[in-house]
Length: 157
Image 1 (cartoon, rainbow, N blue to C red):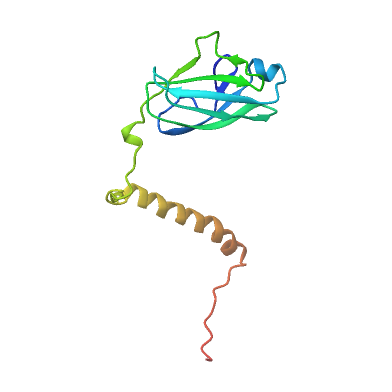
Image 2: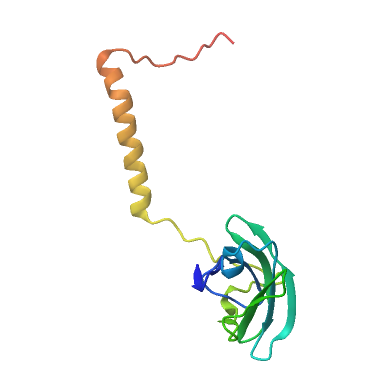
């Protein structure tokens, strides 16, 4: 999904404490730069700043990043010549969403799937009816044509 100016993520939402794959097809990719480094941080104060050299692929420069906690994810890019693509000094800033508590499954808690429900009588009758129709369709033509013979048990054992 493209969010802004040639920066793509492999997800619709950026959720804190998750991984995201980033593809950059901006100025440095279009200028055929040899290497690009992503410079990023979290929140308005750029906490946990880090630099990662991105991999050059046919789809742009790509890398995978662990998103940490914060209200936003800020980033910019630097090429091998020390030139910056920082959105004209504004940096690229994306909101981070909190991980939904409903999605978290704790390993220590037992997983209850509930009680088994009894089968409805209508369901049971529909199964019986299907079996009866199958037997009629299968065996009635054999009986009518005379090709049906009962298996006789051999009592010579």
